[in-house]
Length: 387
Ligand code: ADP
View (cartoon, rainbow, N blue to C red):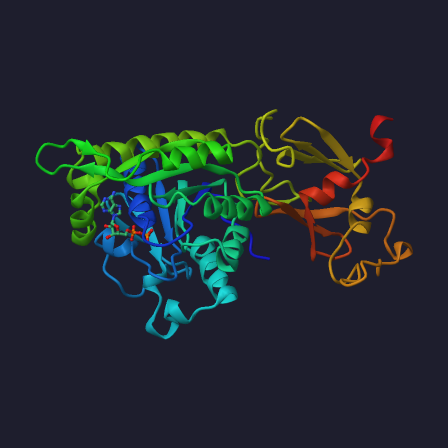
C-alpha cells in the first residue's frame, strides 16, 4: 500500500448535489483567499465531468512536468498549487475514465504530486452524490466536506443524500455555502435578492451543520473566471470577494476544530517513524473518530474523540482480521485457524485508511486487513488492561 503524504495537514472536499451551482468558482476563490491569508494551499480539480479550475485560474492545459524522482509538479497560479484532470494526456481523456480509474488517477494526484508542505488541500469533487463521489470521498483521509448550493437549489433531499454519503465514510460536513444569493448591482454595489433568501441557511439548520456564508450573484464573477483570474484577486473589495474571504476564514477555522486524527499517517511501529500526533479530545465530536493511538508491549491503545479508551492486544487484532483471506466473504465464517497465529505475534505497521479505518501489518507478514473504526470499537478491550 502506498503511504499517504504526511505533509498535507488537512484535505477538504468541495461538493455539490448538482452541476452549475458555482462549486469550482467557489473552490478557486476560496483557495486564493486562503493563500492570501498566509496558508499554503493546493487544489485538486477532481471534477471529471468538467475540469474547469485551470481555466478559472489562467493555467494553460497540457501535461504537467515531473521531478527527477518521478513526482508530478503541480501548476502554480495566484499563490496556489493546482493539479487537474484537465492536465491528463489526450490518451486519458477524463470523460472516458470510469470509477476505479478516476480513483487511481486522483490518488496519484494527491500522493505522487510534489506538493511540498501544505496547510490545506481542497478537492473539487464532481457534482452529485453517486458512486464516483463516494469512491473519491473514501479514497482520501478527508478532514471534512463543504456543500455548495444555490438559493433555487433548496432541495433538502439532495443535501441529505450528500450528507449521508459523507457520513458513510466518516467525513464531517463542515458547512453549507449558498452561492448566487441575490444580485450585486454593477454600478451601485447594492445586493438585491432575486430568489428567496436563506435556502442555504435552512439546509444547514435542517442538517445540523454550520452555515458558512452566502456569495451574491455578480456578473464580474463570470468575467473573472473567463479571464483566468479569480474575483478575490481582481475585485478584492467587491461584496462577492468579501464573501469568499469570510467563508475561507470560517472554513480554515472549522477544519481546525475537527476532532480526531485528521492527518493521514503511515506508522512503522517497529521503529516509531510516522507515528501520528495525538489530537485533542472533543466530547461533542463524532464518537467514532480516533483521537490518539499508541502501542507498547501490552498492545494497541486507542483513544476515541469522545474520550473513551481501548487496549487491544496485537494477537487479538490479528485474529480479528476480516480480510478475504481470514474470513469467508459470503458467510462471514472464520478461515484463519487461531492455532496458526503465534502467541508472540506483533504489529509492525499501522496506517490510516480514509477517516474510517486503520490498515495493519503484522510480524507474520499479513497486511491485507482493514479495521474499520466501528469494528475496532466493537472489540473487547484486552483483559489484562487493568492488571
Ligand atoms: P460548478 O463547478 O458547480 O459546475 P462553476 O463554478 O463552473 O459551477 O460555475 C458555473 C457558472 O456560474 C460559471 O460560468 C461561473 O462563472 C458562474 N458563477 C459561479 N458563481 C457565480 C456568482 N456568484 N455570480 C455569478 N456567476 C457565478
